[in-house]
Image (cartoon, rainbow, N blue to C red; front, side, top):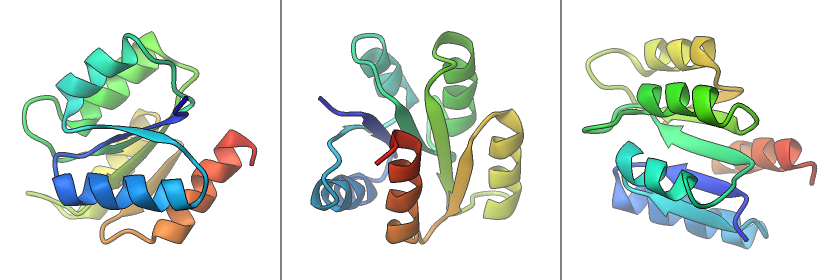
Length: 122
């Protein structure tokens, strides 16, 4: 069973992260946006959620709020390449909303995987 849920509206990024985690021996589930993630979270338990911030419809901030309210034991990692604001602004906000770690895109995949392994206790 997957311990990690990856949420990103960019199909290529989702696939890249899914493959990188598989190579590291970590199973993941993916969602294209916050709405899809909400449906998945309702039926599958996860230890870690990695979410992009800038997404259409339900964005990463809304995902973080949902997780803090309904699933407070899930560790949240936020990632962003920016949008209207600098990525640092989004990531600082994500951390203040409850993200345990933040990563700026383009991602350092090794550092992200290492952080997830740390959270999972691997």
